[in-house]
Length: 313
Length: 203
Image (cartoon, rainbow over all chains, first blue to last red; front, side):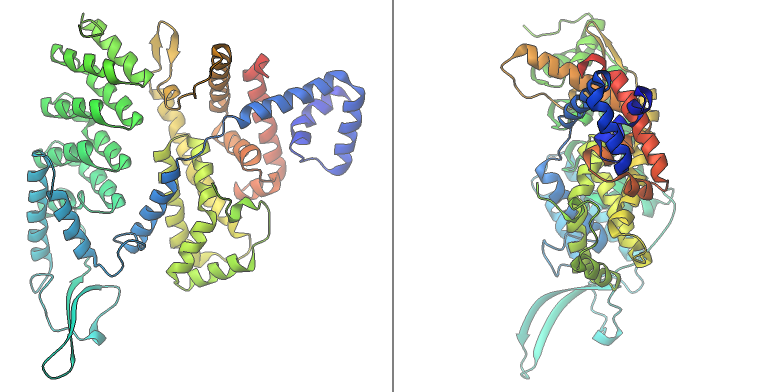
């Protein structure tokens, strides 16, 4: 075997991908040829160096992925969570949670969303409210369409069992985001418990970001959503509005508070692209607390261009 | 992190996995969940190592297993489930890598007094090392390795990832990527040569 042919086989030899007879021939050559043996050593060193670059996922990521997947498949909450809750109950719970204990900014948006859903459901559900007891017998229920939450089980006066339950029907509606009702439903869905639903809703709302109610909802998601993917989608949707003072106010808040580096890096790009003197204090503040080199360098550059000092005194 | 079913590289399907697939095909959700848990650690590790972003890895996980969920009825046991699953996963990852190549070309690398800085360089922070010289060397090596990996085409990157980091055989890799073992060998050779040329005297 020539050195040239062996050098072409070294990677395959290292990974054990040669046929046994080729492997023997390469091995024999490596014993006799110092130059090729050194090549083989380089191959090993490179593999060792590359092993150190192996990325591990954060421990919580696997749990999050599993929960998201099961939620997407079952159309509601993760199954390991609270079995038996209907999609509608979960929705109301999520809405109640989102209304409780939030800042002033979030409350009006969430309230509007709740009203919007009431309106849309009333409009699209013939026969009235989803909780109305319309006397379905168990046999008439299509299991994939009706969700029930048992509220109580107790004996009645005749000695029978009395079961009280809420029921919700799943309905599928489709329409264009031009349709006000579709938009209202999307705005409501942006507060759903399932992050996948929130992310998809935000994605659909992107084309309507210029409308005030959509813009406020996107700002709300960007500032407060617990899921980084949803926040990134909201940020993406808000990019064309980066010069809007209200948007910039939220972007500045996100730059100072968001714990996700990828989001902060994108936010700083948007902020410095439309820089103005009013940003100086905020940028100096970021310089004091930011760990990420990219964000720091962007802020530093912007401060210099604004003829401001990098630190505060 | 624990080893999952995909960790046993090239192994035949265990009867348990086989029956989980059949049960899941009949609509048994618990079986599907167990099936996911048998493979999802490897899938997440692959996505994370290729894309180096938890958000992107999460997207890959979600999309891959949703596709599995929707198409499991079409799985006919004419290849291993692992190969079938990885065909889905590698396709999604290749799409992401291709999109990223485009984004990278669009995104401005920031010029600084210390030279150009790429925004993603700072995503992974180094651990603290008491030896500053070694820290510096490690950092330079890390940057060089990242450059080397980014210089690969998405397909070369995928073959290298599956062979070097996931320990799969080139024959399986070819099967997953819809190509021959020979083509996978050529891809691995090209990837190795490119990396050796970028890493230069570091190795």
